[in-house]
Amino acid sequence: SNNPGNYLPVLELAALPLVPTLRPVDLRYIAMAWAEADTFDSKLMDAVASRAIQLIDSLDPSTVNHMVRALSKLRIADVHLFKALGVQCASTVSSFPTRELGYISFAFVKAGIHHELPLLSIASEALNRVAKMHPVPGARLARAFI
Image (cartoon, rainbow, N blue to C red):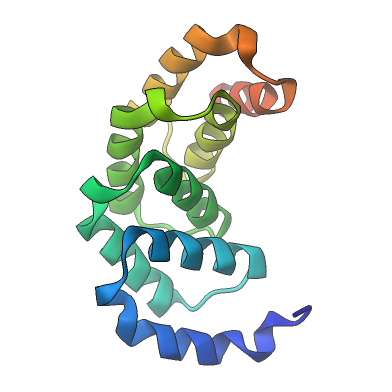
């Protein structure tokens, strides 16, 4: 819909009680959908953030990537969540596609995570792959470190 404001409040109310049962992929898709809609209910996103912290060890690299990008776009201010996602990112950064390194580093910076574990790990991995990096994610990577 071109006007998500009409139906999102109803979806948020329906989804909130289900959050404790959500799997990592469900959290990923909710975060991505709400980021695309550019609107969110803080209670739902707070619940999604809490559930993500509970499941942090089971988040695969793709889910970490998408959640960091979506939640930073939504301007979620949960430092504990981003630090936990950062630790998970750092432990799996070698599994990230080269094109995603710039995007996720920029998302961490946008979320307020500066000069910490995920960025150091991403920078180290990017140095190994810089010759293969496309200019757009490369530019995002550079912006993250400026």
